[in-house]
Amino acid sequence: MQLTIVLPSYNEEEVLHETSSRLLALYKKLISDKKIDDNSRICFVDDGSKDNTWEIIQELSQKHLHVSGIKLSRNRGHQNALLAGLFSVEGDIIISIDADLQDDINIIEDMIDSYNSGNDIVYAVRKERATDTAFKRATAEGFYKLMHLMGVDIVFNHADYRLMSRRAIEHLKEFKEVNLFLRAMIPLVGFKSDNVYYDRAERFAGESKYPLKKMLSFAWDGITSFSVMPLRLITAMGFLIFLVTIAMSVWVLWIKLFSQEAVPGWASTVLPIYFIGGIQLFSIGIVGEYIGKIYMETKERPRFIIEKKV
Ligand code: UDP
Ligand code: MG
Image 1 (spheres, helix red, strand yellow):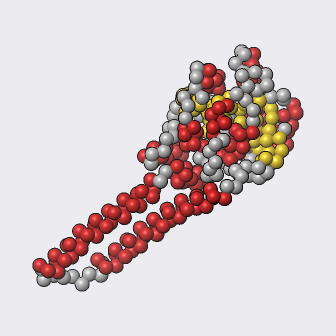
Image 2 (cartoon, rainbow, N blue to C red; image 1 turned 45 degrees about the horizontal axis):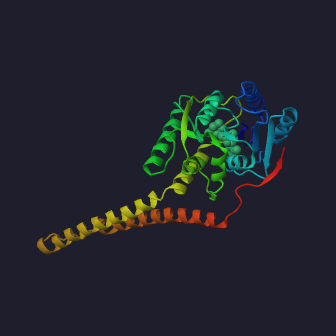
């Protein structure tokens, strides 16, 4: 069985040597245990790095039979780089993992065992978020819960560390969208799947390439690419306001007809204008977000361009 591990790498010169030597040690063991074939590969995808990432990948691939690399023509972001790797490599089973190896590689053997017992997709799931800051933990777990509430089928605390069979990859190729949010797309492929649990470590070198701004935009993309719930909420909100308005009209009429205290109300005139105005702008914004998505999808631009392979 041929295994390929795909690692998207953006400005990762500080970690590549350590990462490849850890993985090569694992390959050595798996090959001698006859779990995987000798033609198995480790494939680094250089996502248009500005540092020496590509030079190091080239050097590693010359030195080690099991290391290969793909260079994208420019930086396209983690999800696109990952997709480029998944769609370009050979292998009966393909595992994706971050280049910083924060995710524990010792469960790879368990993932392969799970594949051998009939699972096409094996999700690696974090047991707990002890190495995260309280802020990151709260926002990340809140995000998974929100996605769930919005009706998106997503594995709790699973990121992009997973094993996929050849046929699952081939079916993933039939998904043509350019707004990529892989962790919600993969469950749509179906097939029998399994979870394997692990603890996440700190980065051993370099710094996170996912600052808060990128994290927020990733979460927002995830929601609007997979759920029309925000649009439905607008409809519900509009209906609610309609009901409130009817009740208010009845009340105003009642005051006017049956009492002497018709108030020359500034508040009751001006406040609703701001209120409705705000809601309208907000709603148009959300609708616009989806139109933006349609716009991007209709262009059918390539999701990645490969410059070189080694
Ligand atoms: N990454 C990428 N392109 C980007 C940003 C990040 O390929 O534009 C890669 C990065 O090299 C790493 C993975 O995505 O292998 C996850 O990034 P990082 O470890 O910085 O994120 P964190 O673990 O902090 O969420
Ligand atoms: Mg990381």
